[in-house]
Structures are given as structure tokens and as C-alpha cells.
Amino acid sequence: MLRQALLRDIPFIRELERRAGEPFRTLGLDSIADDEPPGAEDLAGPIADGEIHVIDEGRPDGRLSAWLWLMPLDDGLHIEQVSVDPEHRGRRLGTGLVRWALAQAAERGLPEVTLTTFADVPWNGPLYRRLGFRVLAEEEMKPGLRIIREMERALGLDVVPRVAMRTLTP
Image (tube, rainbow, N blue to C red; front, side):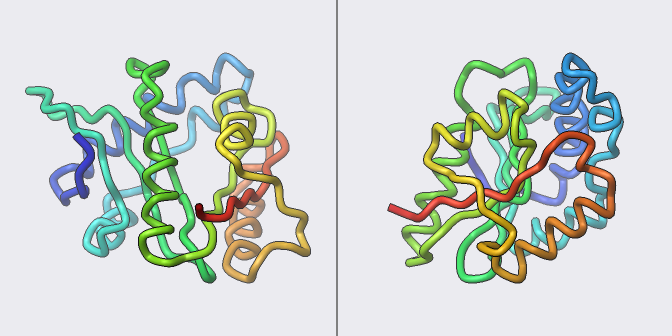
């Protein structure tokens, strides 16, 4: 069940994010797999603002299946993070979360959804292209998205090509 995240979900979101990073090792991207998930203090504000949603299938151990951080940016919505527990790959949970994000933008009358991602990682860039996103040139990026890309570069995330992408809402 998709629901808004609660503060009590923070440890489970962080645990899920660690697990979701492990497949990057198969591509030789150990530095990405080793990257620490957002801290509790980084998640608390967006949770309070209603920006983070989780797929909670009611497991007794509290583990979550997937999560999405969808925030306002420029004149649209921005997918800051979407992650699926590797145990649940192939169930199209990530695709469902992205489609939900698009529906949220449309419901709010917003013209676009943006994200940044690895261009060629199979479950990143190619997936988003299939969902209707297109790569933006630097000059096409609005100020908020440009700042996000600058921060990603400063954090060393560009170990392989990263891109900003956008799709227009239906």
C-alpha cells in the first residue's frame, strides 16, 4: 500500500536505501553502493512536508518495499529519490511510483516532473526514457535543477555519466 511516510519510517527508509544500492556493485559502482543514505535529520523535514511516500506491505518487521521523495522544484515536481528493495525488483514498484508522481503533478496543475539519474544504468536512465522522460541539455535546466546537478557533481556522484531529465505532465 502506498502511503505518506511517517517519522517512524526513517530507519526503514535508510535500511531500504542501503539495500537498494547493492545492485550498483554488479556494475563496478562500489562508491555508489557505499554511499550513505540520507540521514534522519535530512528525511524528517521532507516527511513532515508530505514529500516522502512509501510502499508498506505490512511486514511484521516493518521493512518497506519502496520509497519515493517527490518535492516541488522550479515550476513542477522533482523526483529526488525513488528506490525499490532488490527483493522486490521485477514487480514494477518503481515504475508505479514514477507514474504516481506524474499523476500528482497533473492533479496539481503542474507542467512537468524532473529527476536526475545515471544515464546508462539499466534501472535508471533507460527506464525513465521508456516512461517518457528526456535528457535535458544544461541550457534547458531551470535554476533549481541546475543547483541540484551542481550539488551532485560536488558530492562526487558523477563517477559515470549523470543526466537531468524531464517529462511533461499528461
